[in-house]
Figure 1: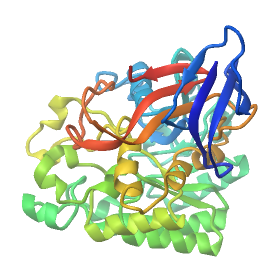
Figure 2: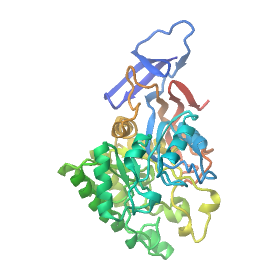
Figure 3: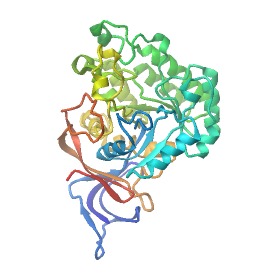
Figure 4: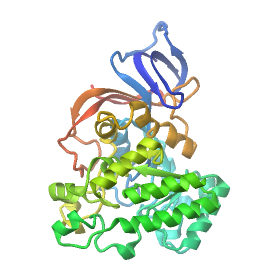
Length: 421
């Protein structure tokens, strides 16, 4: 295949130019002004932008155990529609990914899908926070990192030992930062949103104390530590300080946390309920500042599908937290960050391609000769409407929204895995 006339943006090399790309056997063979060979398939993308396939470091495909919400296949379809060619699944499935057998089952079944699916192992057995798993065995079996996402590790000593082991293995450890002792009802910010509902809610303090602790554990352990789905402006400042001190700490921002505030709860109900919750405009702007200065170096969706029945539970704060995110991520990034001038398109894509690839040592993340032929092809200036989800679930406050950044093709391993046509 030869992909002709695309505007190539490659954050890894800071390249932006009109170029053709020749693909053979799933690999990029040539980049430049190329002439098609006889019988070579041509994909003319004149007027469109081509970038490395997007990489999401934090998603839930609910497989095994909760496949009525999502499974590996429907999750892959949603990812491809959103421009993602690589995703990293969290370990809070049923059974939990705390054994080589469960990990191997997922990775074997993932081979049948059209995108690259990676799997984390849980840090503790059964996500109980009491006994550390055999991280060596999970790493050897193919885990790409370790996390108890969804549940904080309250035992600081155990968390530190896990970080030390992860540092020894040179693998990331990702942490969910919410201390439950401060939380009355999760998923709703303690402030305007909680007062509106007449509940106690979840204060930023619950996140801040955990981020503060774990930044210091990261500093002293040397572990590649990821602060997941950061929501508090204070936490952004803590990560910034930890990086200045020399900690190998990274942070994820979700599109919903840099786009919405707690005001969305009154409008969208449980569709705006997530852990950690949407917070204040001050927090949202602090997250954007963190994205601008590199404190936050990853954009991850925390794609969290739920059934309509679950999200309809009353009172709404008893409904499960989380939203589907893979199909709206690029559009929200362009609409909320690039169009207002907070980030350039190059900077946005850096946090969605080469940064996650480098942190997790994944193939892809860059368009260069001999790299995997993983691409997203889109028009950053074309509007589209959020509807018709490829995911099994459609629990999103962005349904019906008009966003910039229409995706035309997603190509993984040299094959078109999504086409808008």
